[in-house]
Length: 72
Image (cartoon, rainbow, N blue to C red):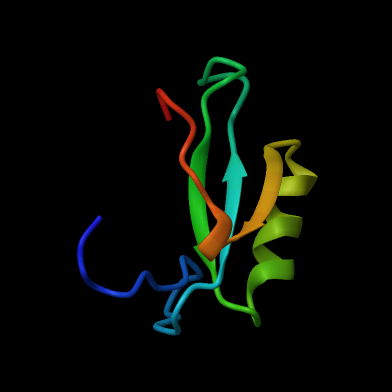
């Protein structure tokens, strides 16, 4: 990771991220693989719903508590 503050993954958003949305696409990734999107408070619900509707969302964790699983 760089020294820069992580920013929200929502299109056009430049706000500091405070959430990690862990997800995977079962058609492309092994079950244990976790991809991540970052979210600010405002976009957490929208991004979670986007991933959830597709069955991709696995976990939502505060950024300060996130530890990347091995092999992610």
